[in-house]
Image (cartoon, rainbow, N blue to C red):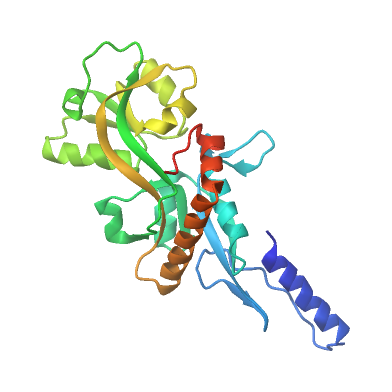
Length: 280
């Protein structure tokens, strides 16, 4: 995916052949993440889109043994990029807690890290309409835990591990607002994949997560989900709100996701990376 680079080289070649006598300097593409990062000629206009994601979420957005960024979120974006010649997508990795802030400050154009729409996020950001995955958030405890934990009420007085700024954190924070901070929220500081160690060691009593991610994080079955789903969510991309370029991009992404669903590409990617087809 070097649409922009190829264009810059081509323009330079034209200047050389024409014997242009003026000194010309090539300027690197703007990587600040604004949707106005555009390179164009008379034949084509390519919009450079910066995609913010993580790098330590196993099977979703992570660095593999070859040092390459890959995973479900990454490969879905790459498939979208293949089908949209008017855009060039470039990844920028960061801590999960910084992704939405980077979107708000125009350092990136799309947030892609299994984001779920909730009222708090919807006040500040634009979401596309067509989900590229679906999940159910549930309470997760150690498989050896014999406590009768089935609901958030059963977590009163207990420590619950959660990622800061996540949709799961919002569930706990909203509960605590109505219940005098009854649950002790422990915010994850570093590795987003250390849930198993934290819960099985007894450092925390539970965590909350999407049911389809548990087998990925815990292939040995040391953890288990309990109780009913706390909520069911559509997984969407996040864009800047009240921004015409972002709205146009979101509409285009929606149309492309529908194509990926119709031809079976999204189903294959979900099965490959998440173990099952969670695209329906």
